Amino acid sequence: MAGMSKALKDLFHRRGHFDGYTLTGWLYQIDDGVETAWNFMSVSPSHETRNYWVSGEVFRGVTLHMFHPATGRNHIELHGILTDVSEAERSAIRTATKKWEQEYQDLLLADNI
Image (cartoon, rainbow, N blue to C red; front, side, top):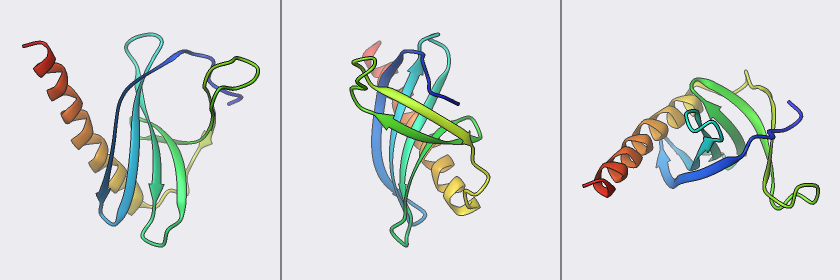
């Protein structure tokens, strides 16, 4: 993909350790107000760092351009679907996603009380 032209709203972020991986995740809401996706930075037990855009079970490569000169705002460039993500790393990211999405929902509920 050439890049994401949709507006993104940063909803939530977390950092933690899951199954030997150090994960930092940012949850974004896409401009349609319905779809969400995660941007993950993953550091493996062997210290390899990779960045992913995760929507459902789909992992894509991602490049972040902070304050992109052409737009004056952050730009997220999505790449093709990745098939080389190990099952261990996918599992760690799925575990983090499940935990952090529950934390996000709990925060929303607490704000509405």
